[in-house]
Image (tube, rainbow, N blue to C red):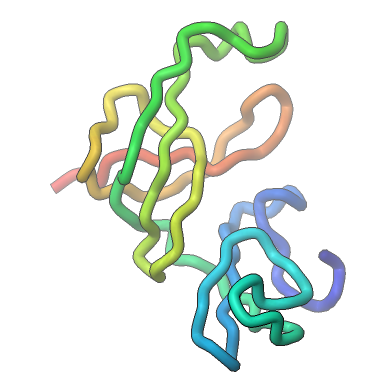
Length: 121
């Protein structure tokens, strides 16, 4: 979205952004021009910290495309972000539900993607 809001990983920047609705307080991941909960226009775009907790994990052992074959096995995780929204991303293969994680960014099939790793205690 080139509307003055900060760029995120979908645009090649090393950032995760989300939106907060001023009218109802709902949070949403993936930017839209309206709030998905109440329909109010122009929710505020914010940059996420990149930290969260693993909600679910799924190890992919069979590539969906030929270009993904080089990455097998790879982990897809749902992460409850510290800011209060949930997102799907790639993650370290040894992640488990409840792990505290932080995002870094890496290339997957030629595109920049968020990649979560366990926070070392």
